[in-house]
Length: 283
Ligand code: PAF
Image (cartoon, rainbow, N blue to C red; front, side):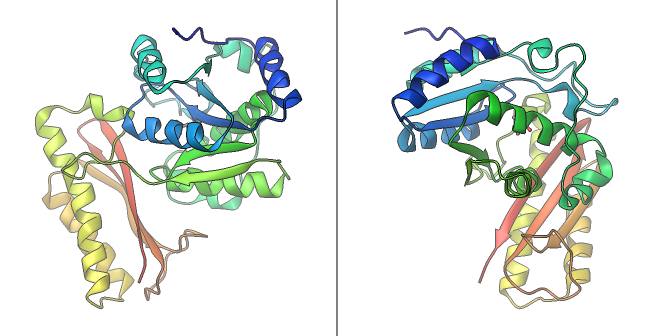
């Protein structure tokens, strides 16, 4: 059956009230559209684990900085709905900007401390926008479970901390990064990459694999590892590196001496496209 997206909170509430009255669990997959296999893996998890699944599609303006790609962010709604239909999704919430941020809207979340590191240093307003829209989407959809990808590692920490700090009654489930067979992490922004840039983009996942090898071979010097990460990224042709770090997976604090588990995180520009990737490294 073709999906007819729900576009207003009033219509959405009618649907979710129906689910609640039947004691059905609601799984929500928040997205900005331009869906790829990474998103679809979250949707499959929700379909498998929850009675009802709602996929939200909303390109959230408040999480883009003034010099970022809001206007050119890919928006292929037809393709998105076709992919979701093929999986058996019945409910898509795709509100317009003024439904989420009506005139007079003025409340923004001040995100937890972990938001100030890494991404927060380069995109200072980003996580306030993310936290605000996620909280609104959780409230609008009355979600019991919300599914996020590990690809946005820091986003997951921000959302988990916000949900705990504000006693939001939802379970956050984190799903693995989905990669192409050559290691490239799936991202809606990969469509911006030329063939040559796509080759260069592989340097991110190769660098993460190298970090994992170094650590498993006994390297514990955080400074040495990070220096090698940066060098490998530059040698691989990336245009610039925003950050390349090995950090504590709970706090994102970096350490001089590595003690597992850690997470290696990279944000780098390939041409005009900013890419992020990460790897959790355990014993
Ligand atoms: O990860 C994303 O696509 C977005 O940050 C999210 C969680 C949908 C909020 O706009």
